[in-house]
Image (cartoon, rainbow, N blue to C red; front, side):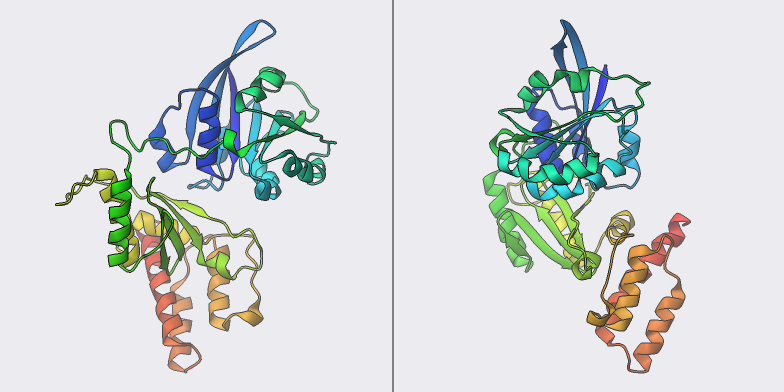
Amino acid sequence: MRKVIVLGSDRALLAGFLRRTRSGIGFPSMFYVTGLVFGIVRYEFNNVIVTLQLWTIPYPMMYPGLAASFARGHTSVIIVVRPDEVKRIRELIDSCAIKDNVSKMIVVVGDIKDAEDATNELSEVFQQELEAKVVDSVEAIFRIYPRVFAEYDTNRKEKGEVFLVSLSADQCEEYYPPMQTGTPAINKKEIQFIKDFAKKMNIKVINDDMIIQTIYGEVSIHIPSGEVAIRPIVCEVCLLDCKKLKNVCIMRVDDGWCNEDVSAAALLVIAKAYALKSLDLPKHVINQLIMSNKCSNARFDATGIDEELYEILTRLSKSKSPIKPSLIDEARRRLISGRLSYTVFSILKRIFEKYTTHGKESGE
């Protein structure tokens, strides 16, 4: 049995890719906790049936370090990206500790021109001359390039082959596995109910997403799936253009109740919106929001940001340990002397109080 890792930035796109392999997707609940989905497919190669384990690993992972752990033991890799995500391929490979000597299939979801535009950059990344080809379906990838997945020599020292193909977007749609077996998906009536409820809470709604501004960054909730993501506040002022969107895990303890005819899944989406709007959240969720701002690559322009805010953002994004209380003491001193506004001080105080409280309770 071969273990094939399917990498990419968009968990729903990876799940859609896996679904198109005709494999039965296992452990759908993992999709909403870690972003992972798993499937098994079988293909014939040289008159032998080869069984493939397919693990999709989206990046960035919700919990640091999980990506490399789940990728362990891989024999080949499929990287599924949209054209604007090609520049992240090296980051994807490094985050999962992908071996140099395994074969790699790069799937650009778009037209052939999108794949051809990526050849120069990817040839440099892999130090191989690449040529873009077209495939008409996900299954065709396994049919046309079977040896990419079937052949693997554990003693091979040289770099593995790299293949680049384009796949039409209508052959790799986003897919959201059912939240749990036996629970009906959120229907159109419930989606509208949630949107109406959001307006009563003064929450912005764009298409099927609720947008909530928090002190940690802009949080979005995809109503049909209940998926929560945050664009960290550090990214808003960072000079780099990556502008990462990170997933946040919020799970229900019970089904709740409502005098309207709505499902438990719909109630959970409403509960998430209310909790994020009021920041009445469990500490493990607060920690996820804080940790989403951690980025060793963040770059700020000190001339374009308030001096105190610049210092805070720099420490928040790069610190590997809880922020020391002395930083708040310094902010308080500047507030008293009139060199820091009360609004900025209040925001910083709320962030660091939650951060240091969680750090003490978790023993960090």
